[in-house]
Image (cartoon, rainbow, N blue to C red; front, side):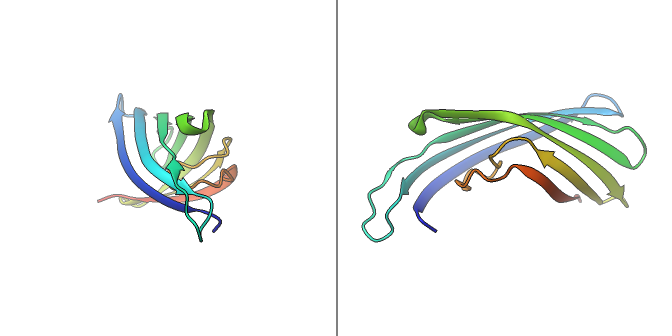
Length: 130
């Protein structure tokens, strides 16, 4: 690790079933943080970030779902803004688990503590519910 990070993160995630087949959702996350690139003599600077996600889910058969997300990461202190999409396909396994595979067309994660910007590519996901 080449840096030190101190962060407070607030995140709100919601989804709404429009019909039996379609759901829409969104996520907003905010990071109020400080970062130092020197671990031995830390000199911290502000590192704020806002993440906006709009999501649509399509339940196209009894056990299969498709998901599409539009994402925007705003980094005002770095004067940077990144955007892109993410797609996934999920298979329900029983009532409480679904397993998915997808592709992240962006280089950022929805984990605002991750500052690497290397999240582009294929991912696997397990979602459990009570």
